[in-house]
Image: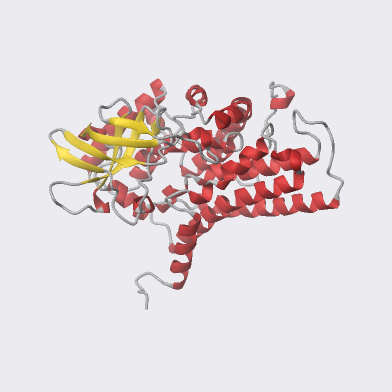
Length: 422
C-alpha cells in the first residue's frame, strides 16, 4: 500500500510492465523513478527553471536513491541496468523535470559507455583488464561519494556529429596528456566533479583523426579548467550548459574512461549510444499529455476544479494527442529494445526515425496541449509552459539533430552500402 499523501500517489507508468513485458528490474526502477520524480523533482522544477540554476539538490538525493549508479555494474556496487532499462527509467524522470533528467543522462553515460558498451567491444585481454581496473576507481567515486560526471560534447563545429575529429586535443607528455580546447553547451558546467572530455590525441605534426579519439575524465578542480559565459536559454535552463575551457590541463593516462580506440569503435558499432538524449523527451511528451488530461478534468493542483472535458473540440484534441503519444511510444520502445553492437541497417534507420519522432512529437504534443487547454495553461505557475519550452530543445541536440536524422534516413534509404552518388 502506497503511504504517500494523496497528491503524491504514484502516476501510471509510461510503459506498463505487463503490457510491454518489462523485466522485474525494469518495473522496479521505473516505479522508483516515478515515486522519486513526483515527490522530489516536480516540486523543485519551476525554481531551477526560473533561476537557471543547476539542480544539485536533486543529484544529492539521486545519490541516496541509488540513481547515480544505475548503470554501474553490480560487481562495482551499482544497479547494473542495461541500455533499455536506463532509457525507460530516464523517461519516467523526464516527466517531472526535463533539465534534471537531461543532465542526469550526461552523468550516466560516463558509466554506460565505460561499462556495458565497452564490454561489447573488442579489446585485448590486457587492455580489458586495465580498463576494468581504471573504471572501478571512477565507479567508487560515484557509488561511495556521490561524485557527478558530465559529458561535454559539442564544440560548435561538425565534430559532435561525427563528421570530423574533435578540435579539443590531447598532446602526449610524460605520464599522460596536456589537453587544450573548448566545449560549448557543456551541461553540468560548474556542478560536475569530473568532466568526461572527448578529445583527439595528436603527437607532433600528425593529422587529426577520429580514430584517435580519447575519452578522459578531467577533475573540475584541475589547473587550467575554467567556465565562461552566461546561461539564459529558452528551455532546459537547469542544465546550466556554459562554455568549458581547457588550457594546458594535465591529465594522467589512467584517467581514460575508455581504452585508446574504443570510442571510435563504439561510435561505429554501437550507434544507439547516441539515443540517450531521447528518454527525457519521451517523458516530456507524456507529461504534456498528462497535464492536458488533468486540466480538462479539473484536477490540476492549484487551479479551480473547473471541468472542460464535455466539449467535443477538447475531446478530439485529446484523442489526437493520444494517437501521437502512442505512435511515439511504440516506435521509441522498439528502437531502444534493439540497441546492441552491430545492429542491422534497418535497426539503425529505425533508431534515426525514433530519435526524430520523439524530439519532434514531444513539442507537438505540448503545443497542442497549450492550444487545447487555453490561455491559463501558458502561465508560468503551471508546468505546461516549462514543458513546452524544454521540449522545443530536443530537435537541436547533437549528435543526432532532427535534420541529421532526416538526412541520414533519406540517404541510407536511397543508397545501399557501398553505392556512390552519381
